[in-house]
Length: 181
Image 1 (cartoon, rainbow, N blue to C red):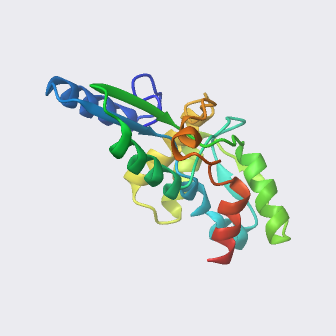
Image 2 (image 1 turned 135 degrees about the vertical axis):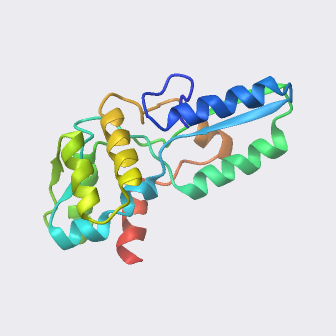
Image 3 (image 1 turned 120 degrees about the vertical axis):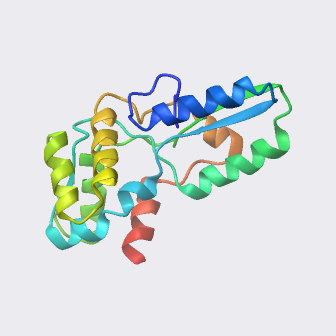
């Protein structure tokens, strides 16, 4: 998890405990602290197109997500190349966006007006539950968006693109792939 040692995401606590257990083992390790996966938001595109709105609770929080393939490439590079006793890679996408910008790009590519509708965290969680997501997943996603509003999904260090020696997959490309899927 991106910045697991200080992240506000509820999900980060599990990552902190896992890192502490691994550290206590005394093994030489490389931690890959992956940021948010672009596919997490792209998965909502069909519903946004169907209902005419993209919903969330991230306010104007900037999100520096990357594609799963980008993170997988970084893992391969780190596996082969990291030889120090302890390495921590804070990995995030090159391009940060708000969910308003995400919805604008979705609108541009789909040819439909898809506004971003920002909800309170509890409202967003309830909407996800009404969409038949399990309550635990709805809670996790709503908490993650609320933390994104406070900067928890943002990083501008470009360590991911440095590791993979290319720019990370763009938001535009992720949305295009989701629309064409």
